[in-house]
Image (cartoon, rainbow, N blue to C red; front, side, top):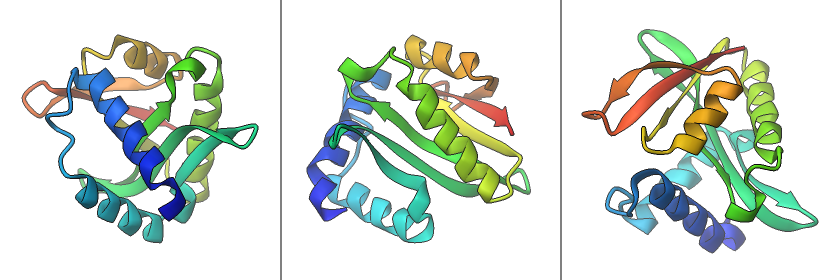
Length: 147
């Protein structure tokens, strides 16, 4: 993780810019890295850097949470660098995520997305996620997928 610190921060910040138009909700970089290290220790297969030809092109952050009294998979981040978007690579990340959730015997997974991130919403609907509803005063939409 130490070798990828700059890359994961860059990717996470770009995801905030794309989703919310600015970095106001990003928070502190050190706190993000600490959170990431904690989650990696719990779910080492859930936090990966996507590579192509040994070059980092994206990031995937997956974990397990409790929601409404049941265990679910949770996608904290699907991210691809801009020049790799729209080329089918997101579907590969999604297949990896489904495999992770299946291997943890989960039947449902969720994520949250900004309602202004139309490209992400289109992708999530295309891969079969359904909207559950708005959260955080409408700043995000919770979506769920069934395995």
